[in-house]
Image (cartoon, rainbow, N blue to C red; front, side, top):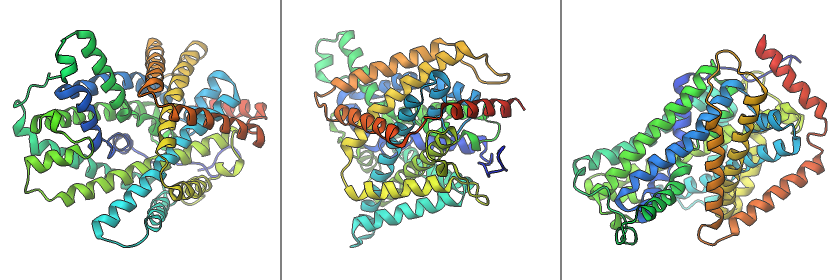
Length: 457
């Protein structure tokens, strides 16, 4: 397949179930193993409520993304929609690279986690940095091989990581009903005020909100999905609902097997299985965690490479990043570029502060994209056959994300992450002006017009 200029382009080969598993795999990360313990510390045995509230909050933006991807199934994702709505290349550039940065920090972090886990599991004496780079070469090879191979590996990892959570549920389902699922921590239950309880639930929801944001990763593979107008919205909704059901069952199981005050902050689910099924080999959960972390790295790398490809096609990044391998139909230059960057980041080691700042920036991106959909709904009529949501959905989505930004800014009194986030925006802005990205606004407009003409044809 080639574009209007005769250059190879991405191939639509991803099915509905593959993109659904891709989104579900992005959501069911290894973080849930520690997240339950942290959330239970805030909410007590009512931790399951946090997942309901956070799913509703995340679903607002998820539905906005479903609407966007049905209208504009482009690899540029958030950057494409931002440019189309605001017509400000600098804003589109910052939004796009912010999302890419979140993926880069995630891949680098996961590579070190996998390397440390494998070294510990197999008792290897090989330096961690060598194992991390070996892991990155392995994942990069899958990406260069093709999107089909990526989706099959993702499906394998998703089934394995979901089976880990199903093991947790199966081990403790006999304990259901043994604990009061509405027991809050002492500071809430002493005064019993609804306002205090509501605040606790909201704080827990902030913590669990990020368990549902796989829709950003899904958006950027839209150009490779069959019938994206129908399949992409369906996949986003199915993945979010499935993740919610699994998370709630896991949360109920955890606080049923162990009193919430006994759950450790780290690896709480491992402790739950150890108590419910003392005979169960712990090595199995360790292997499952490696697959879960590997899946997160794969999904973020796919997302980052497609976003760089899409931004290049828009004229916001160098042309080379928009090249597609003629035989494998992969954006090989973008994939290799990301490899070079994450190798450097993985060698740096501890980038937790950088990762925390990109989470804050993602909320800003969600706010910008929600408002972009509001603008586009007012300006452009809905194409025939697309999935559409009422305009109040993106409005509420923008409001929720803005509120979460405020909560994150003032949570714990640590302003390191906000400071790094601001510094990262300034760095991306400086890069925009140094590279001259987006100066040819006529090219940006021509790209949008050509895409519209192709869609109509």
